[in-house]
Length: 139
Image 1 (cartoon, rainbow, N blue to C red):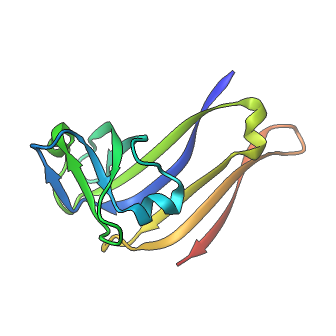
Image 2 (image 1 turned 180 degrees about the vertical axis):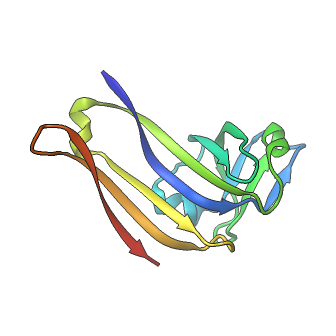
């Protein structure tokens, strides 16, 4: 059986722009993507904490170091500059892969700077049930 697991999350990233007349996607600073392992053209789920909107689109890289978060095409209708987002990538993993599974989350301040990195892994407890363990670093 395959499990749908969160492999990467950008938490609290603020929208810096919206371009309605673009082909689609979300443009993100490559530094932010590299911090959690999100690849260009990877599909992500986006949850707008400000409005409650939920969408799915793919990632393109913006300018490195710009701290950009620009929704393009139809996705531009779901947000405004300043809205706070959660962006998550997932992967389908076989149960045999869960012991090697690592999930990374970065948390942002209002200026889209990384303030904390959280790395999570799964392990089995004494009863044989999966449980997460987390390491957090403050930037």
